[in-house]
Amino acid sequence: KQEVTQIPAALSVPEGENLVLNCSFTDSAIYNLQWFRQDPGKGLTSLLLIQSSQREQTSGRLNASLDKSSGRSTLYIAASQPGDSATYLCAVPNNAGNMLTFGGGTRLMVKP
Amino acid sequence: NAGVTQTPKFRILKIGQSMTLQCAQDMNHNYMYWYRQDPGMGLKLIYYSVGAGITDKGEVPNGYNVSRSTTEDFPLRLELAAPSQTSVYFCASSRTGVYSYNEQFFGPGTRLTVL
Image 1 (cartoon, chains in turn purple, orange):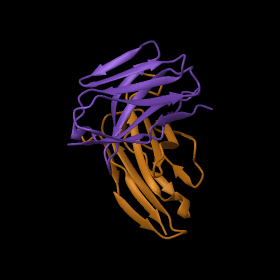
Image 2 (cartoon, chains in turn brown, yellow; image 1 turned 120 degrees about the vertical axis):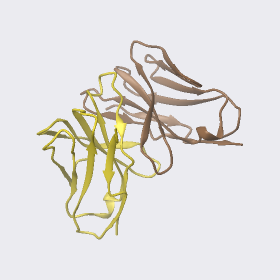
Image 3 (cartoon, chains in turn brown, orange; image 1 turned 180 degrees about the vertical axis):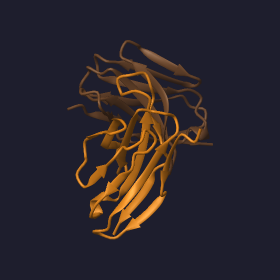
Image 4 (spheres, chains in turn red, yellow; image 1 turned 180 degrees about the horizontal axis):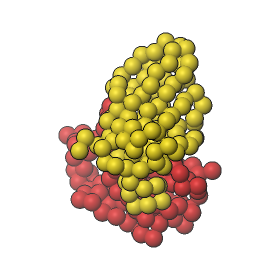
C-alpha cells in the first residue's frame, strides 16, 4: 500500500528565505505526483503536477522535483513571501489508478 | 464558471441524525470524488465516480453513501451520524482519472461536527 509522508509537519521562516518542502512515498512505481496548496478553511488548489517521465516542473517561484528511484519529491519556494503561508500537500495516484494518496501536509508560515 | 460548489459550509449534527452533503460542478467533468480531512492529516477518499450512474468505494466508505444521477451532481449521504464522522469534507472533480495530466479541482469544503 502506498504511503506518503511529508516532513516537517510545520515550518516557520522569515520573509525572503528560499525553502524546501519534502515529500516521500513508499512505492516508486508512480504515474505522477501533484503538489497542492491549502489555505485555512479553504479547499485545495493544484500547484504543480509532475509526470513520472519528468524530473521537475516550474511555475513562477515554485519548482518541484521528482526522484522516483529514491521515492522523493521536493517543492522549492524561492524568495518566500507572507502570502505563501499555507499548508502544502503532495499526492500520488494509487496502484489501481482510482484515487490519490495524500501526505499529511507541511504547514508553512512566512513571517514579515 | 463556478467550478466545484459545496453546501452547506458548516453543519452540526446530533448522533444518529442523517444528512446529505451537496456537491456540484459546472466543468462537465466525468470524474468526481469525495474526501474527508481530519485535523493535521491528509485527505482520504470516501467515494468516487467516473461518470453518471457509476460510483465506487474509496479508502474509507463505511457510514456513507453516494449517488450520481447527473454529470454535474455528486451528493454524499451520511446515515446515522457518529462522532467519528466529525471532519471536513471536500468534493473534487477532474476531466479524466488520476493517471492523466488533468488536475483535480476542489470545492471549499463542508465542516461537519457530530455531537
